[in-house]
Image (cartoon, rainbow, N blue to C red; front, side, top):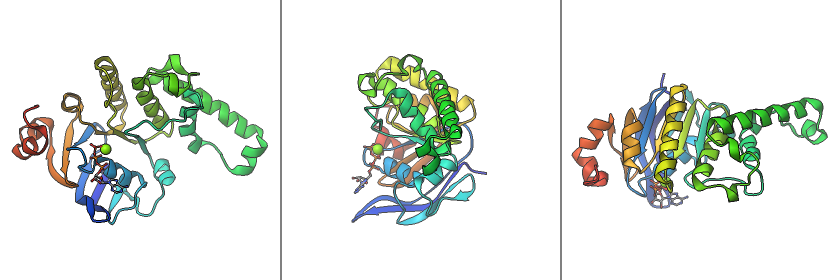
Length: 253
Ligand SMILES: Nc1ncnc2c1ncn2[C@@H]1O[C@H](COP(=O)(O)OP(=O)(O)OP(=O)(O)O)[C@@H](O)[C@H]1O
Ligand SMILES: [Mg+2]
């Protein structure tokens, strides 16, 4: 069974065809990258997969189940996690609390017991705090538990987003340009983290412009241009594809 099936997906904004009749499959496990020029439709595609946007046409299936009409939180419950191109963190909460927000979906958060702070909810909160701390340690942020995001380095914020996504216990993790804005050593740390997650059995979909990172870490690459599939295959095939070189890679690879 595929981890993700994208079937004849289209998204139009006014007259702009951001995604046009796009179909592809992602098999479970390993790292799958999605690359393409600025404005190719990569973030729009992630927003369609996660349910932030509704498609103009077509369908997304997650581990065989149609996501048609399902809201974002239901897709998260079905095993979908993501990070954002620009980190979406709450500035006036600690890093740990930001990760706990991700965990919230697994708590018994019905309004009344939460408002009354019944014992079952309190133990759920304690458990969530403990798990969030474990996840921060896992992504290499054990020193930042009580820091506010505004005082953290950019690379740490990117990893904080990964920890928050992991708090939802995803089976498929979508990363939108996790290496953008990072220095060389932060990129090396990030590469190690993605490899660790992939090694643990998580299916990773990586949208990224850093070709050194993409080529070194991916088992499979999908190239999109003007919202359409330009090529797909193993890194060695994709980097040699003349259409991909002409539209995107140029002489860089
Ligand atoms: N909410 C929106 N309303 C109108 N047009 C949009 C919207 N979101 C995206 N677009 C348009 O869709 C196209 C694809 O944009 P998208 O952000 O998906 O590209 P991208 O591949 O992620 O680019 P980048 O590499 O720069 O992040 C662009 O022409 C963009 O202007
Ligand atoms: Mg984008």
